[in-house]
Image (tube, rainbow, N blue to C red):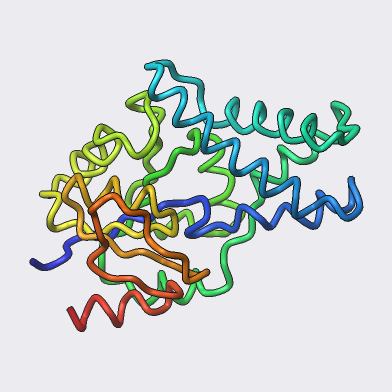
Length: 222
């Protein structure tokens, strides 16, 4: 079935969550990789726990709490000023190098973002990357008050686009997101930059690519 629109995850797919490492190292020498990795892991874990508990805090709050936990765990003296700088860095995440070319190659297709990010977070990173005119929709889970991979999140995108799930291409680098979107019925494209194995949950993407610039070509081929 023809893909009528392409929906992208934001964090880890379009924007590099580990681009904060340089600031982490500036504040805490030689701890940048450890801090950024634990921060990201705990950020996702908190989102899943909140969803299972049927509670909701927006992604800014989740990200801030995950940062505090990571700093405590690594025994880093992160005062309020350091934490504020690190949180601000999350509003200025670098897009991956191939993002602009990949999106340009899909210019004839309606594009959207579907993200855990809170609306102000998404507005900031999209604006800082000069991508405001690229996406027909920038959709936050904040509208349904639950996180990926809940079906409610993917249904929100289908409703916003006014399309059947099978006609929507969904792109993410996060395997849990790809599995959730596949289970919902999207045609999924996994950006597997690190050549990781897929989680063993019985759902597989339509395509696996190593970089976003492969997407337009591979969509045409399939």
